[in-house]
Length: 86
Image (cartoon, rainbow, N blue to C red; front, side, top):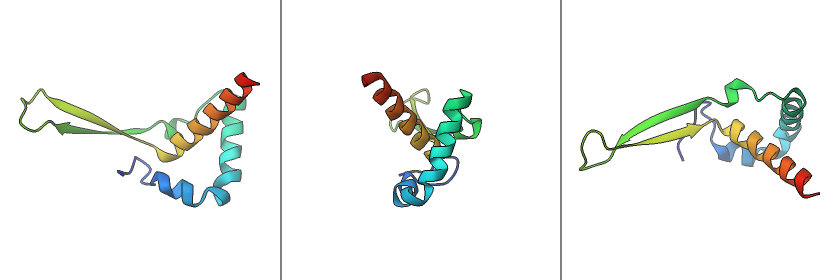
């Protein structure tokens, strides 16, 4: 899989989830408490791919998201879902 703007693959966070757990919990909890998601986790790298055999107007955008941002958004999403269901 392609790397996002922070150059860390999602697999890195899966492989080191235990050592990173406390740090991610602090980031998620602080983010929810402040009602603010850090801008550096929202950075997206856009790759433009031309569709082969098509006109120049035919292209596809690929958005490479920040891996830590995806992890944090996933945790927040699960927390909200759990709170709503209870």
